[in-house]
Length: 626
Ligand SMILES: Nc1ncnc2c1ncn2[C@@H]1O[C@H](COP(=O)(O)OP(=O)(O)OP(=O)(O)O)[C@@H](O)[C@H]1O
Image (cartoon, rainbow, N blue to C red; front, side):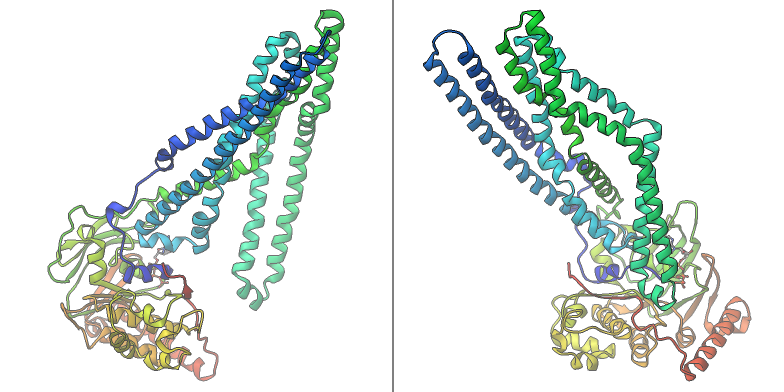
């Protein structure tokens, strides 16, 4: 059973979000409210960029005035100096304002992204989490959202200024001398001409190989880190280490190939955009025009000063390219999460009558072309325990997860008290259905809070009563701060203890429908008693007899069940009372016999001391409460 325990904690405790609080927003939709802000950033940046030309033009004008024959016009010089200084001041003021607004918008956009992601994560099917690692989701909400920073805070302003300044300069230079302007553009034209050479199929193939080689390194590191205990215990470190070395060697080869292909073009680009080359072109062209074309020497000055700025757009496109690529990939991952379909909430929720559970021709597959449940018909009567048994992979976990609506069936329906679960509000659903699965998730909160997740107003007496029923009270009292002990901080719990806390949680919730996956990994006597307590004989709840569905692993649970359902390959192959099924000597009887001999063998090996306890498997403790 793989379902994230996060789901368990959520299902029993955190109120599901209201349907209308879940925004079905796309990225464009999220950015729409900031259109005005982006416009302000761009306008302020344009004004700042244009004003920034004033000091340069002032220098040009000063040069011309001072170099002109005849007496110097001091009044004119002063005006030019003041205009230049004023331009500089305006530039600083407006670009600072533009950058400030850009950063404020960035903060707001990041907050909006994180809120949208949180809302979406709160509304996706709980089962969706089972296929994702917590770290992967934390990366999307944390790092990936932060990675949009250059995209939102810097790109609009920087790009605008990188294009506006050369454009205005060009217009001005054309008015001075159109011939030298065209000559000054030669480096830009050469640089642009080199760009297609970076995009040839061979270069793109090398880029793709580079990405793949990076991916191989990352996955070999992840494999090593995640499986470090298994790798160490089973001596596989050599193999994993070799895999890492091969991945890095591969990467070096791919990187060399890519650099060899690109280096000539990149060097050429650097050369033509470099200030010495630009100045050389301007000087050679200017000199030719002065001597042969009759251009006044003072007119060379603006080209020397402004010519260097003309290459800025090309440089700007290259500069920050990696950041922008990273931001694009991050935005893609954010969009993937925002695009996950929410579990629809009914517009007009219905109220179930009683808590009879019925599955009618239920079909379900995680992938479209592979059905895991193939037409299940099942009725769970109140006051009865139904045990699901079957070989590994037969679909037991998938089946029971449909009751707390981890997924909706792809065909057929699951009803509770005559109401399709899809017509039931999720608050109502989790009030009526509680579950204890193997993958227990305890929050980094006190023991009392962990038990009272689903009933936040429960008194300490209620909590202790539930803990006693779940046979964990004595153990809690031994913890450093009793019920106030913060799990994962003040103390850790064994797998069985965590399982019992989770059972106490379900017992306190006292929901009329209980779904339980009996964990054999924590088969200590206390946990077994807790499971037995959860299954009965105290089956009555304030709302009538409890309906229980259990994935049974222990023979006692199977024998005590009212009904046994034998699953094979996603279909019910036998069902009935356990003794009757045994008497029929069919599939269940065969399964029972092989199970019993396996248990006997295990007991023998226990006696010889070779039994594995697996005490911590499937338990995550000390997660931050949400
Ligand atoms: N999250 C998932 N994504 C894709 N396939 C899944 C997922 N969870 C289970 N499956 C597949 O669905 C099938 C049924 O799995 P399920 O866990 O329901 O069986 P099970 O009877 O509970 O097995 P076990 O007793 O080993 O826990 C298996 O083939 C499994 O690989």
